[in-house]
Structure formats: structure tokens, C-alpha cells
Image (cartoon, rainbow, N blue to C red; front, top):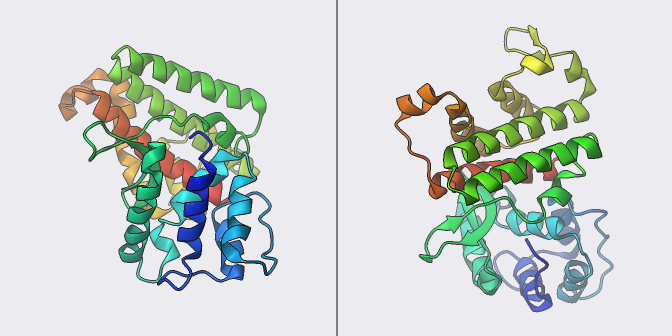
Length: 276
């Protein structure tokens, strides 16, 4: 995502504060929202008018990843007592503000994900975001590993640009699996001794399955259940490295299939960022 226009950010601030509206947030609630969205060093509310205070915060940062997380967070069903009913109303209004920026928030298995409107005006296109490297950097164990991850992303993009969609799916799955393994062992170094199975046995990191990585992230509260469940398609399509698996599924990958995989990966990334 590129930096948003200051007027767009001001409209977002008005939506978030929602003075006299059904979703109005008091000053302390704004600070809490920023914290839940993983905003870096969120300021304590100082008692000044809320909309200008929040607008100043949004326009003074060059951290587009933080802005992206906040946009998704205000559309998150977890933010509202009645869940999706209110969250979707906020999402619809937010998308009217984001339309001029060629951005839209869509639910991927119940998790809000930022994407771009499709050419038909109804679908959403998910791709590797422009700020992916900046978003991953605080999550991973080293700069060297970050560069390896980004090389894999570049390879998947090259495959997609040349119509090699099957290899693109394999690359997306490989990227997601490697990211999860590094983030989990970085957050909890005891996992380097092994990932616990339901039966209590430990699986060495180098032999840990994609499924177990997701289960571990979910059990630690680092990703939400919806994001966990929808990653199944990424796991399944990553296995197209074995042509027999693709034949059995009867799938002919195309650009839409690629978007279907980036969506849940971005949902997981959002959760990993906000659970830091």
C-alpha cells in the first residue's frame, strides 16, 4: 500500500471517532484501538479534540503498514459486541473513502484484508503488498532471512507475470510456511527443541508440517481461528509441487487462484503483526 492522501486519512479519522454516531469512540478508546492494531508506540490521548488528534497521528507517520493494520482493525468483527453486523457497516463506509485510493477491505474467511478492487468493480484482487518487506522486517529473526523471504516473493511474482500460476501457488505456500516457522521459533525459542504434537511428542522444526505450524500459531493466540482455517487452501495448493496432487484436485491454476491464496496469507500476516 502506498501512503494515503491526507484528506483520505482525515475521513478515516472521522469514521473512527464517529462523533454522536453508533460507533463513537472516546479518547481513551482511540488509544486502545491503536494498541490493538499494533500501532508503533501509540500516544496517550491528550484531551484535545479527538478527530484532529487522530488525524495528526495518521498523517504524521510514514509507516504505511501501521495504517494498513488500522484500516483492517476497524473492520474486524472482534472490535464490536455484535461482531460482523457492525463491522461490515463500518467496512462499507470505509470502502467509500478508500475508493479513490484504489483500495478496498474485504473479508477473507471472516478476517478483514486490504486489497485492490477488481476490474469488474465487484471482486477484490489480492497480491503481495508493496510494503511487504517493511511489514515482515519486525517479525522475523534476521535481515538475512528477510532477504531470502523477499527473494521467494520476487520469484512468485515472476512466475505470475509469465502465467506460471501453478509455480506461483507453490511459491506463495513456501513463503507462508517459511515465514511461520521463523516467526514462531523467534517468538518462542523453546520451539527450536521441537513443536509439540497433540500426543505430546516433539517434532523437530525442520520436519514440522505446515499444518502443525498453523496449529501452533493458533494455540498461542498469534493468529485467529478464521485465518487459521482458511489457510487450508494455501496448504493444499502448495502441495501442487506434486503434480499428482493437482490432478487429483482437478484444479487448473489461474490469476484468480493466485489471488485466492494471497488473501489468507495476508490475513495471517495481519494477525501476526497485531499479536506482536
